[in-house]
Structure formats: structure tokens, C-alpha cells
Length: 521
Image (cartoon, rainbow, N blue to C red):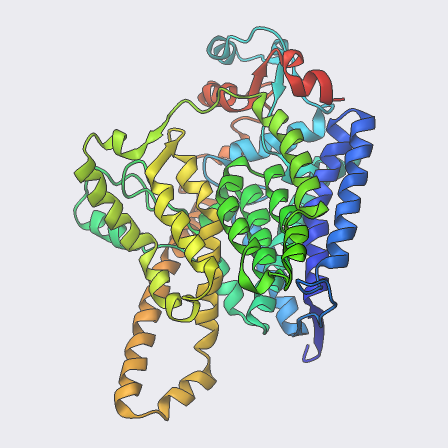
């Protein structure tokens, strides 16, 4: 356990790139006509080879010594255990109680295992008369959703049964979290448990309005991270629980972008997110473009700068992914009904501005204050801040997925920068601070105390949700576990979810859509 294993940046890049590419390749081979699937798989493999070849080169193309971090075996074992425990606690595999969204998560895996790809549902298989009445389906229904993340688990499930597929999903998600731990530590240049702490605990200070509401309820409070109407930023823990299929790929990609040594592969890296989430893709554009133009990634000559930006890997796979998944997602083009500028929902710009300022103060300012001193010259900080300032201005969907999911890349950039701050407060740093002059020592102690308070406040969401999950799982504080409420979209167990299933997952007359008519197998 005291031995150390060296993991280089290149080794991390290979792990991360293969992890992201494999589900996409399965989608290509399983969902598309064979000839298209083979061509796209070969294109992905070629891009992967190019990315691995170039990942450790400097902006001018020369080989550079890859960053290497010594990871104690103990750290790796604890990281693997934490990843598995966090995965199960977040409800992946539905071994513990999970909130409303897990009914959909279980049904997605069920149907990917049980149905022939691409999935097309026959309305006649809906046996519940109330479901039939609500959906009022006319003809076959295509299944369209960003389910790429489940593909490895679905393949195992088709071969060995649902239990094996569900186990694979748990392992796959745990692998993604573990890879993120490794990448964060490489970015910080040392194996630090701060990566685990902040990945779990990073959040805004939602605890403050929660405590205020506990004393005196106010009308706008809806839930712990929805303390104002129409706007909410979601903690890492909550994202890993409800939208792990979007969060894990996002976290890996942001870590890869921050670690990039040149900009020849950033299109390949960032573009991969479109296969996992159209929402997160919107939020990935500004950070990816900013990183591509960062001074440390610029070649010395103008010619090399241009050829690097317009490299094969910055163009080929992003264009192909945009086309294939764009056609797939656009087959369901009518699922977003509620959209517009947020101030229109408040009915008063002054009221919106007041809410907006309070929101930014509690959700963005706490982390910004503790990272700006170190990162003020880092364009990635300002890219993240820019995204976090503009996301609350627009709304899409009733619960505003735009704000919740588009903000995810920027929030994780802030999370990694906060991790750096946590890792700095080691025993050695405290001992150094203790030797400083009294006036400076007092200033450092105040800063550390404030940082500790902010970290405790951020951690409250993870604590709150963990206690809720534990209580519901082992003491039955909730009457039912929602993951059995749907079972299959092809035969919905009850009417409670029928409207949302039809609205979000079904495409009527799929054979007349471009994807199902020309691309699907």
C-alpha cells in the first residue's frame, strides 16, 4: 500500500479518450446502417490514434516530457472505493433509493437491453388503459434520447442479462469518476484527496436560503437547489445523482481540456460531449474555444497556429458527431415547449435583477473569491465566469435544463480551481503560515477560516442528499422507490409518467424522419 505508481498525462489521456469513444462506437455499430457504422467507427479510431499520438506534443509539434504524478497505491485503492460507493449512493443501478429521474434511468437501460436497435415501440404493447388514453399514440414511436452513456452496459445486458448489464453500468460509472480523480490530481501535479472531496462536495451556498426558508418559508423556495424561480445551478453530487450520463463525460472532458498541451485535439475532445448531452455541448463551446486560443497552446509561427486550429481532429469528428447525433436528436424536435428570456417570466426587470444578483452572490462569488488571486491570468477562469453570468438569462424547459446543464462545464472548471485551493491548505502550508509575522499570520488565519466556512456550506448539499438517500433506503421514509414506476417505455407501468415520456422520448412516425429513414439500421 505504500508503493507508488507513476501515471503520466498521456496515460490519463488514453484512458479518458477510450472511455469516451467506446460508447460512441457502440452507437455507430448498433444504431446505424452497417456501412455507415463501419465508416464512422474507422473515422473515430483514426481520430483516436491521432489524438493519442499528438496529445503529449507541444504547440510546435515537438515531443515534450509528459507530466507524471506518483500515485500511492493506497490513494488509488481509496479512489476506486470512493468512486464505487459514490456511484451506488448516487443511485446508479438503483440499488438504493433515488429521486424521480431514476424511473427513467432504469427504463432506458431496460429497453436498450430488451429491444432491437434502433428502438421503435409498437403502441399495441401499452396495456394500461389510462396510459393509452393519455398518450393517444398513432402508429410506431421511435425512441430518441441522449442515451449513449448506457451503451456498454446495454451490450453486456444483451449478452448476459439485465443483472449483468446493471452491474456493468455501476462499474462503468465508477470508472468514469475514478478517471476524473486521476485527471484532477495530474492537473494539480500531485495525488491529493482534495480531488475526491471537491468532486463530491462542490456546490454553491444553497444552504443559506435553505436555512432562511427553514425559519420562515418564502413562496419562491421550491427545493434546496431551486431557491429562486426559473434559475438553479446544480451541485456535483446532485448532477452525479440525477444526470450522471451527462455529468461524468463532462467532468472528464473539462479535465482533458485544462490539461491539453496543444490545441490540435481540442475539437475531438470537446466535440465528444455532443454524443452524451446536447445541453452540456452548449456550455462546452466557450471553454473549448477559449482553451484553443490560450497563449500556452499557441505555436510560434502563424502558419502552425492556423494548421493546428484547423487540424483533422478539430474538424473531422466534431462535424461527423454533429451530423449524426444532430440528426438523431432533431428527430425529436418538439420536446422543448417552454423557452425565453428569464426576465419575461418574472414580469419585472427590476425584480429579475435583484434575484439575479442574489443568485450570483450565492452560487458563483464564493468560489470565485478563493480562486481569482491565483487564476486571474488564466483565461479559463474568465471563460467559466462569463458562462456562469449569462446562463441565468435564458430558460428552456419548464425546470430550465438550460441553466442547470449548460452551466455544468463552467461549474466544473470552478470546482477544479477550488480543488487547487483545498490542496494548498496542507499541514505543511499551515506550519509555514504559523512562522509568518503576526499581522500576515492573522490575515492568513482569517482567510483559512472563511474558506473552511465556505467549504462546509458547499458540502451541505452532499450531506443533505446522502442523509435523504440513507433514510429512504434503510428506514423507508419514502413509500416507494421510483425506479419501478415505468419499467419500460414500451409498456409503461402507470399513467403518472405517461405525459413526460411521450413528450421527451417518443418520435411519432419515425420512418419519416431523416435519421430513421436514411441513417438508422
